[in-house]
Amino acid sequence: MHSLRLRALALGATAALGLGLTTTATAAPTTAQADTTATAWKPSENSKLNKVATPRLSWFSCYGGARCANAKVPLDYDKPAGTKTNVAVLRLPATGKRIGTLFVNPGGPGGSSTEMAYFADQWLSPEVRAKFDVVGVDPRGVGFSDHVQCLPVEDQDTVFSKVSSAFPVGWTQEQRWIQGMKKISRACSTNALATSMSTAEVARDMEMVRRAIGDGPLSYLGFSYGSHLGTTYANMFPGNFRSIVIDGTLSPTSWSGTAWNQSLPLERRLRSGVGAHKALDKILTECGKAGPDRCSFATGGDPKKKYAAMTASLKKEPAVITDPYTGEEMTLTYADLVGTVLSGLYDPEAPMLVDFMLSDIEWMIGQSQGAAARRAGGHQVDQRTITAIKQADQAPRRAFAYDNSLDAFLSVTCTDSRETTKIADYPAYAKQQETKAPGFGPLWLWGSAGCAGDSFTGQDEDAYVGPYDKVSPKGVLIVGNYWDPATNYDGAVQTRNTLGRSRLISSDSWGHTAYGVSQCVTTRVDRYLVSGASPSSDATCPAESEPFPATEEPVEETVQQLLATKSLPKAARGQGFPAPTVVR
Image 1 (cartoon, rainbow, N blue to C red):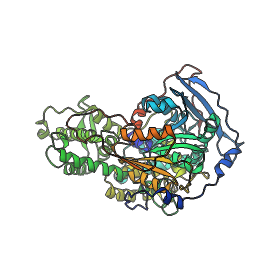
Image 2: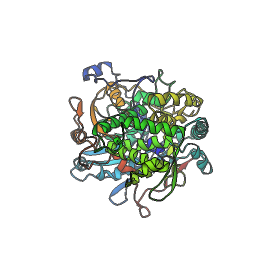
Image 3: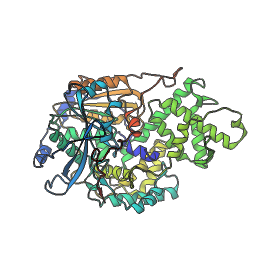
Image 4: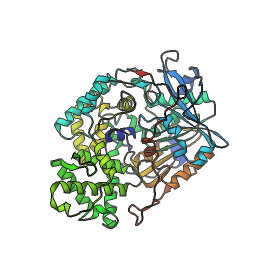
């Protein structure tokens, strides 16, 4: 992904319920308890979609081994004969005796589902690949579907220059950030596609594609923000799915807002910064226990005290460091440090990655300050540290002439989220978040500042904002990772307590999401997808490796890490998606 800030946006916001108060994960209710409080299902969404003609999918061979199609769906499902929008669909055939179709979504909002489906062989278990065709539907406005564009091309660089750091620090930067976010969010508020991009619309589109494929009830696997799509679909169409798995789970009531929490900014409701701070605190604690032989940052003192001193110093004055590979001088700010550390926390090997990042930064700062660090001699800076620092303040760029990643993020997030805040109050919120979760709280807060009530005013009238406790014939399988720095584990617990019928797998693993990283999680998810039978009880998956092992063992990439380096290959004319139509 482009800048570190937008990497955070693209991987989704985070999760936990509650009026800005700290919440504690509690035991989930029994099925009986959940069902007695759940809301009875009324098939209103099916009735609405029954009035819409099922799109015809004209499949064609694409990208070598896949099948592609474009589906025309109503921009507004209340007007089925009105303006249409195009959504791109990619289908990868099952490798064995198929039992159905598995829909996938990588999160974001703004991630490409067609790319995720295309690369399924690289992240999905062979057992699941054998049984399912894998289908990705690029959400409206995203990927190869019609593109949302809120700003004129000539204005984009100017606006992005105001919001290109990990997060703003100080009055001047904050005011620039507010100006930039206002500009783009207000432009999105008047874009017809942007104001029709709520998760509910994406769920309706996915349902129309499911009907067009004609393959029976939906099977679905969604990550990060894709968890909210799964939760929303389960409540809008509770009788239409066979199996839904959500990993890196968002609390739906925190994401969409309620009458009692809409006066709070999105990050206060989701508490992703708290999750990231918790993960870093755990790593620094374990680093101290492991000692210098296994954790380099423990050399010379308590890792927690050393990190606190480093952040305090950078808050006072940025450091000028040198890229040892190119000789280029770089300015390292407090925001750069936090953004760099957050990128490390996304990794399944987060303890070791954060260790060498902090050790590298400590050494480079020392080199710039004089002889004390020079005596350390042969320290080898990892290239990943340099890359992460440089990405922390880069303006985003995609393959298209206009990068619509921020447009797409705001169009989905802000049409979903009910928020009555004022963007001028965000500096005060940032101070509060700095106290709750130093660095990470402000980073996540400012990322969604465009959703302030007086900034984004184009909420989708057909957005789904609950209730989220509909009873469904089949259960949803929820995955939550204790140390996830983006989707706070509390969100998985809250979702388990809310959904009418569900089960929770809790994973003691590092990084963002757990499928493909924890073998325990992967095995349980695969079993549920293939069998279609909900687990009889919740489960806990223990840690499968030490934070700082004596000998390094290979760890799989998360699904998001793999997809961040992938894109659909170039295709001959007629064997790939056409350039998406841009909706200005």
